[in-house]
Image (tube, rainbow, N blue to C red; front, side, top):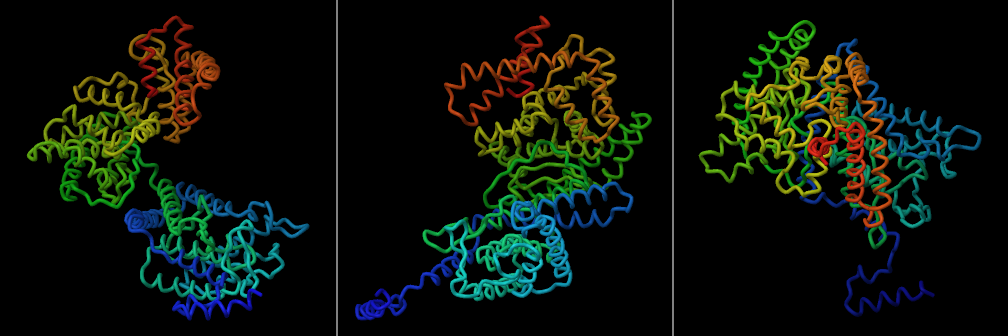
Length: 630
C-alpha cells in the first residue's frame, strides 16, 4: 500500500512546486551512506589543524633523528638490543586492540584461534612492509588481500576471508544499533576510498593525517564480513610505513562514524589526533633508548591552541646558548682537573658531547627545556612564556631580564650535558656557568623565581594544573619553594652541605654518608625523611648502575630508616582509619577528597616516628611535610 502511494505523493509534490529531488521517494540506505560520507569527508577544523601541524613537524624531526642514530649503532652496541626489545614490545601492543588476537573469540572449533590469528598478523605485517618498500599503490584488491591473510583459518561469519559486502541486504551493524555503509553501496565507497587516498597522498597530505583519515574512513565503511578492525589498522600501518614512519598501537581504536541521524559515532578528526599522539609516543620512546632519557630544567608543560610564533628572535637565543656553552666547556675542564680516578674518566667522556652540543628550538606551545644526547631542546612556548613575564618591565630592561631567565635554564641543560645528573647539583652548576659567561649582569632573586615559575606557574594555568604539575615534579625536583631556597643559597656562595658526599656527577655517595653517621645525627639532616629517600632512590635507579643501586640500599640499611619506615607505615594506616571514620562521610568523592586523604595519611606517617622517638618538634615536622609538597 505504501509503495502504491509513493508515486502519487511525488506527483503532488511536483504540482506544489517542489524540486524533483524532493519529489523522489526516500531511499534510507542511500541517505545512510551519503550522511556517513559527508562526515568522513569533513576537513579538520582550523583550530585542530593549527594545533596538530607543529606536532607533525616535530614527528618528522623525530623520525630523522631516530633514523640517524639507529643507522650509526655498531653491532655490539648495547642500545641495539635495547631498541630491538622496545620495538618488539611496541609491535606486541598492536595486537591488543583485537579480541581475536587476545584469544577471546574468533577461532574455529577445536583450534587455537589466538595462535592462528597471530601467525596471520605476522604474515599480513610482512606483506604491507613489502608493499610499502616497493611503493605499491592502494587498491581494493590489496585491501582484500590483507583481509584474506588475516582471516585465514578463523571464523569469518560464514564467508571466505577477503570477501567484500557488495550486494543489497548484506548489511552489518555495530552492537545491533549503529549501521555501517549498506552492502549495496560498499563497492562504490571502496572505489571512492582508494581514489581519495591516492589523490591525497599525491597532494602531500601529512602522513599522520593521511593514516588517521584512511583508518577512520575504511573502518566506517566496514567492507568485510569479519576482521575489519585488524584490516583497517593494518592499512593504517601500511600508510605510515610508506612514509618511513613506524607502526603504532592506538589507545582507543573506536573511531568509526555512522550515517543514521542523529549522527552517531565519534568526531571525524579523532582518528587523526589518536594517530598523532601514538606516533609521538612511539618515536619518543625509541629516541629515549638511543639518546637516553632527557634531563630537563623541569617537566614539560602541555599547552594547546594554535601555534604561536616565538616572540624572542632565534638569533638572540642562539647567541646566548653559544656563549653559555663556551662557559660550560671551561667549567667542565675545571671539574675534570679536580676529579680523580674513575670519576675523572667518566667526566672526560662528557667533553665530546658538550663540544658537539647544539640547540634545537621546537615549534610547540608546550613549555619545554631538556638535554638529550648532543642536543638542548627548548620550545617556542618556553620563549613566549619568558617574554610575557618580562613584558611589564621598561623596554630598556626587558632584553637583559629575558637573557637572565633563559640563560639560567639553558645553563642547567648545559650542566647536564657536562655530566651532572642530579637536578639540584645541575642548578648549582648552572649558576657557575652563568656567572662565568658574564651575560646580562648578575642573577637577581626575581630571576631565580621567574625561571622556576615559567614551569610551575605558567600564565593561564589553573590552580589544578599547577597542583598536578607540582605533584608530578615532586620526587625529581622537590618543591618549588625548596628548590628556590637552594638556588638562593648557591647564588650567595654558601657551601653545599652535602658537597663532600657528592660524586663528580652530583649524585650522593650513600655508603660514605651513612658511615659518617650524618643521617643519625643532629642538624639539618637529623631526620631521614621519606621524601629524601624517594627522591634519591629515583635518581639512583635512573643511573641503571647495579653497583650504585646496591650501595644505596647498603647505606640505607645502616641507618634507622627501617625502624622509621615501620613506624611511618603504622602512622599512615592510622591516618587512613582517621580519614575513613571521621572525614570521608562529610566529603563528596572526587579528586579533592582523594588528595586530602593522601595528605592526612602521609602527614600521620611522618609524625609517628618522631613522636615515638621523643623527637617530635613542630618546626621539623612542617619541614618534612613541606618537603613532600603537602
